[in-house]
Amino acid sequence: MTKRVKILHIIYQLSVGGLENGLVNLINSLPEDKYEHHILSLTTASHFKERIKSCNCIVSCLDKKIGPLFWYYAKIFHIIKQYQPDIVHTRNLASIECQFLAFLASVPVRLHGEHGRDTTDLKGENKKNLRLKALLKPFIHKFIPLSKELESKLIENASVAQDKIIQIYNGVNINRFQNRYKRIKNYVEEPFVIVTVGRLQAVKNFEILIKAFSRLQLEMQTELKLWIVGDGPLKESLVALCQELTIEKNVIFWGERQDIPELLQEADLFVLPSLVEGVSNTILEAMGCGLAIIASEVGGNPELIQQDYNGQLFDPHNAIQLKDIIKDYVVNQSMRIQQGENSRKRVEQCFSLELMVEQYHNLYSLRF
Image (cartoon, rainbow, N blue to C red; front, side, top):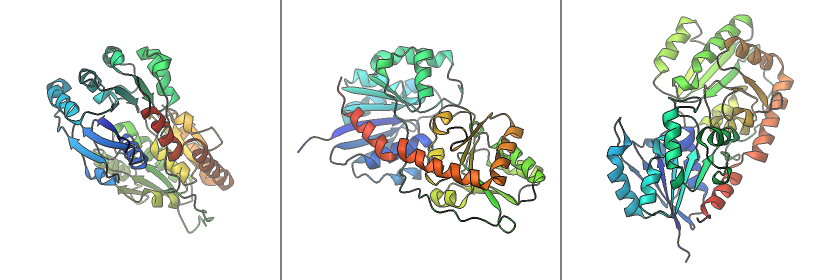
């Protein structure tokens, strides 16, 4: 029997989020007879770990407190030596330091994923962070950016050689997100539903969406609903903003949900106003449900959305522009339906889970 490849995945935390969702989807989809996995969360793991279906995966938590990772080096090194992985795969800035420990532990293959910007460095230009990447480059065999934009920043800002980079997009299980026939609504009787999904934190920029929605509701006779799916530290302030704008009856905060595909399929339009994104799983899921997409022109979003083909991009600081774009989709049903169909085609062709898994399988087969 062929020995399974042992992969140690090191992440900041295992909770609801795009990075974590992509990791769990990957682990659940890689063949169990070829791989076994150990997820090391530097901090904690929430109930999200229950989504892991693979029998060959263990999860452990370091329970790191706020402060430098340096004080946990000995523990991390011990875990690496004890597990003896064939591959260490770190993700994002919070865990990149572990690559030096993997080198000291003589791990054969060392990979680092770039999934998006650090919340304290939205442009990816922080000199301290770039120096850290430059210092650790020699210990990393391959960098894995999720988007072409992240790839270009690695080359331009961190001077990573092109031959040390393998770009792989996120992928979604399109069978889970059915392109259900969307019945034509009578908007005199039924509201038009705009949906967004994400953690309620500043980087997701939901405040500008609420302000744009409020302006639009004042302009239109059509009843509109805004569904905000997710939870986080800004929930109370966002609810208060809705009350201040007297739109609280039209905005529904769904909280953290396990039935996101069903909610997406009941909506008419998807909007993501983030200040920064890598490759958004929620955009891909909405595309899989056959929704036209409005998203901020940041990060990897322009790689998912082809202007006027499956959606439109906007300036994340411009509420009036966002309001006007949403209005176009409300009043132009044929455009919305056509672009929704194009979204589904695009995700099937370019961003399927099967394609992502095949690319990671090829990556994990490399030896250096």
